[in-house]
Length: 430
Ligand code: BJ8
Image 1 (spheres, rainbow, N blue to C red):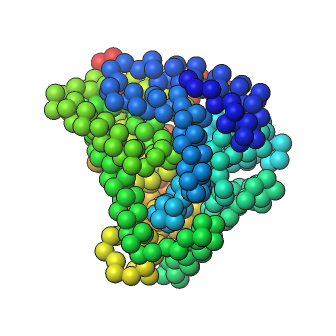
Image 2: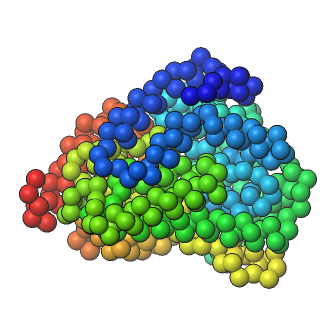
Image 3: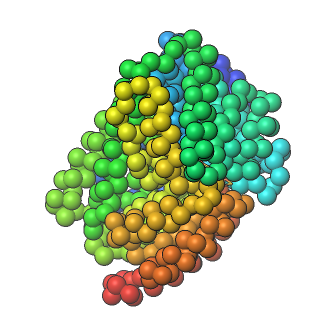
């Protein structure tokens, strides 16, 4: 691997602390990912991306900045990438998924805060995340209370812009969200000195839709039995989608899909036919949070779908490309983004409907409702999801956890029991 220390130094990173992070990630990756059997060959690209996660991709971002582009960090799938890209900026998702950053986050945030928020703040504070260090501005949003208040703290350390996301989906909320998208456009126009044009936005709406279609294509292969790709690998591809170069990502993911197509034709899978099929729903899983997937797939099950923001919520529903004016483009953007069903909204019946549809589409045997600790919106919404699934006779368990490994044994015991129960129901012998 090339020596990137000079680059990291220029990014004002804490090199010593960062060395500690660089030591643990590869070991962890080997254990969780490289130990899998019969992986698609095209997963090598994603292995490479991970091996260069703080190297080559950061170098690319720096090179783009030299050419005048801006890097925009975000923490939520409501921030419209189309606007970011159309204004010559590069969007990167910077939600943090590692326990490594939690202690630093806890220096400023109460311990009973969601680990995603603690780790994100900790990543900035500890100066060990080169993505954070590369951002010209980060865009927060008013989704949950924890995030809202965390932006106030983050503002002491970097340039933070906050989008005011409505919490309901009435007509007046849509008008408000259109306005917020316009204000976000104004911010980037000011930062870049570029004016948004209809043509630029049209091109990027089409590009981001293409990325969504590619992810959807990938997920469609998970509907087969046997499944041609593991849940862990599919999750990794989704996670990488948040910061890889968009055109390259589309190209490489389509290559992977071509390989999966062959596998399906040959009846080849990563797990045996009739392996218990699990859907995970709940809070997002940012790199390197592979905890629940790893537990499921080392306990005799396979994850076939994620109803999360690092899953279906990221790519379902395209932006309508039929628009004749910029105004119509903004409205189409607002419509697509307000179609995402996050638990921060009330009421949020659409999420329950999505979950029930995915159960059918992906032929799901059981659902794991995964909520990060202290995330009240998702943990409260469990009740309505549980009720709807029980009515359909679909087993569901709730797992509330953080990024640490302390509860892994306990969770594994519960997941194993769930999988045994499905096997008995399906008449599968171990
Ligand atoms: S659209 S899920 S990415 S807000 S940070 S709400 S886990 S307590 S991340 Fe999210 Fe956007 Fe919604 Fe998706 Fe809970 Fe933690 Fe808050 Fe979280």
